[in-house]
Structure formats: C-alpha cells, structure tokens
Length: 294
Image (cartoon, rainbow, N blue to C red):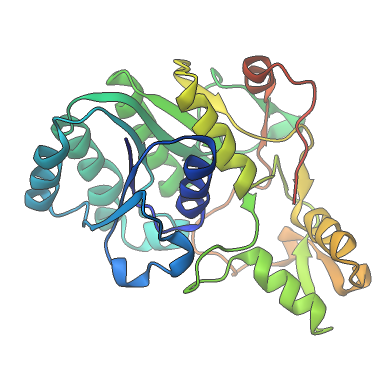
C-alpha cells in the first residue's frame, strides 16, 4: 500500500498516476480539502482522506488506523512558496519541521519513506558549480533552510530524500493551472510571456519526477539522497522555447528577460542558478542520458 501525504498538488497527482500505472498497489491519498480533488484523480484503488498535517490529534488517529498495514510513504505536505515562508516563518516551521517530525514518529510499519526536497537547499551555483548529493548545503532563503533541516530529520530517521529542480508540465488538477499551462495559454493567445534567460536549473517534467521516485521505491533503493534532474541546465526562457517548438507555436512570443532587471518580483531571495549533478541517478537506472521530456 502507498500512503501519499499532501497528494493533491502538481507533483502528488503525477505520483498517483505513476503508482497506478507501474504497480498493483492501493493508495491512501491525503490532503486537507478532498472537495478539491478532481475526477482525474479518482480511481477504485485510491482512498482519499482529509488530513491536516498540523492537527496532531488527527495525524495520530490516522497513523493508528493504518499502523498495522505495511506502507510505502511519500511525504509531500509542505508550506512551499518561498515568499510566504519568508512572511510567515513560524507557520512554515510548524508545517515543514514540527509536523513532519511528529508524523514520522507516529507512523509505524513503514517499508519505504521518501521525502521530496528541492534544489533550493544547495544555494547558488557559483562559477558553474554542479551540485552532488554529498555537497554542503547553503540555502539563500528561509524556505531552503527549512527544507535542508527537514532532509536531516528524514535521513537521521533512516529514510530517503530525493531532490528536485524546477519541475514543469501540464496540470492534472481541475482546480489549478501550472506555470506550463499559463505559458501555453499566453502563446496560443499571441500575448506571449517574459521568461528569465539568465537563471539556470536542471529542469525535468512532473512525469519524469514522479516516475523516478516510484521506481526508486519499487526497487527498494536505500541511497539517503538522490538528485532527480536532467543532464542539461536550462533557463526558463529555454524551457519556454522548447514548449513553443513542441506545440508548433510562435517562438518569438517567448521573450527573454534578466533576473537582475526584475527586482521587486520576489520577497524571498532566490538563488540565481542551481545546477544539479545526476550521475548517481543515471548509475542507479543504468542510463547514459536524462533530458527534459515535455
């Protein structure tokens, strides 16, 4: 049985689809508001449960209900937005650190526990640095610092972490569009979109991200931390061009802008570029190349 905590987000929806496709396992999928779960995420093998990860009484009750069953857990619940984390650090701490610790300690009979993290824990790729899993972390904002601490909690308990870069793909959620969907809409409407050309991430798609984590779980991989990323670092501008080309849309509508000319957009400081090394991932799956697949 899979247990997905925070299952109704962009990545969670893709992970659910991957589990259904790649395994015969049933899924207990948790989120705070199950009324937002669309028909595309409903299946006879999925049991949706309402769960606020910050409600310790509810979490304890939920864990006791399922503690007799062997589980593969993917823990996605988090206070994600770096700007909101910067504005509300105590709320973010309670969600990202305190609630995570409580859940881990309450949930027994776990055969696999995976915590999806972020390249934000690394900080800036100075002088073209490509980060490996055992490099020191140096996050530039509160969100990254909390993710780095959450990783240490997970790995200290003996569980696994995967680090993701910027992820992109069409939303599977009826209630929420992803950045990808906004790009497509802007290009199709001929409005176009400004996209950063001087900030680089080792971008992969939501589908790739989901498939790799499910396959790692299924093969019972025990590496403490694995970077899940592509070979080539791309700017968002380059990603926009790839999308336009794939859909046969006007590439000139993707307009390059520089981060340095866009001050005031973000509250929290962002790393200008964060590039990830994926040699470990390629060795695990015995592949020579991993490219962004949109």
